[in-house]
Image 1 (cartoon, one colour):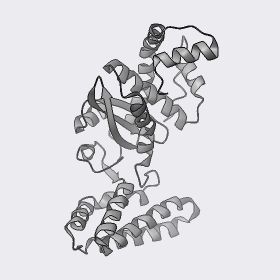
Image 2: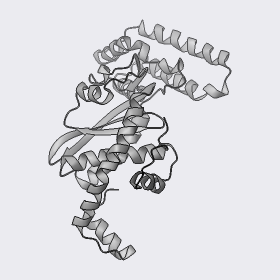
Image 3: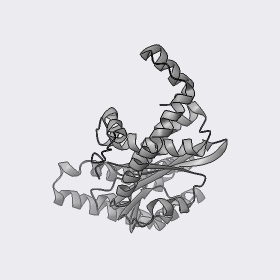
Image 4: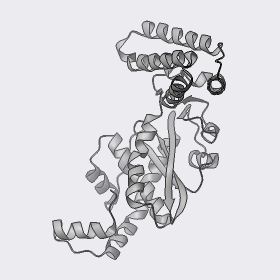
Length: 283
């Protein structure tokens, strides 16, 4: 929670009648630091072994300097790091020897240096870019392409309600429609830039129709960063690198627990116990 040490001390005093100084609170946090890091490392190792990994980043401030907070996530896991760079080296350092089958992200150049064998680009971003072309240029190509992507996403959500045969017939039809749209060059320069992007990443546009474990958007990564954005706006950032690293480790644990439907209190108890238990961390 975005609470200062001073405010935490006041809450403990007024609500729980526990008198602790800010220095005592800092020492409590420092004593937990190594155990939190150990737990985050377990999460990190499991993320590296995942078949499908989504990634995104947002700005952060550390000691008055601009940093970047990264997330690497699956439906059951979330691992965060805060680094002074948004370059591809961060992905290389975090993933190390891990090689997922699919990478889900935006099309930023650093994200395109992922270690996966294939990738799915976030269609939510593409829908917004297409909407700009519709609003600005009244582009018919953008209107048809946006409608196709929306139908494809809707089909993805209906996957469990349709027979395999019916689903694959629709999926083949959408791939055919996409090929037809990419053969038609739009007129405006803005539309042509997006058209060229879709040509370049054609196989990554509708990959989610071929694999049921791949989402059509990277919304899960964006949602995983939402609380951190609020935290940054309320607190203004971190005063030290150790504080930023500790926060990244802690939020990795809290978000992973949330995704697995675990009790935060019980999870922290299991981590800070004399004999820590990491068995709750599921892949």
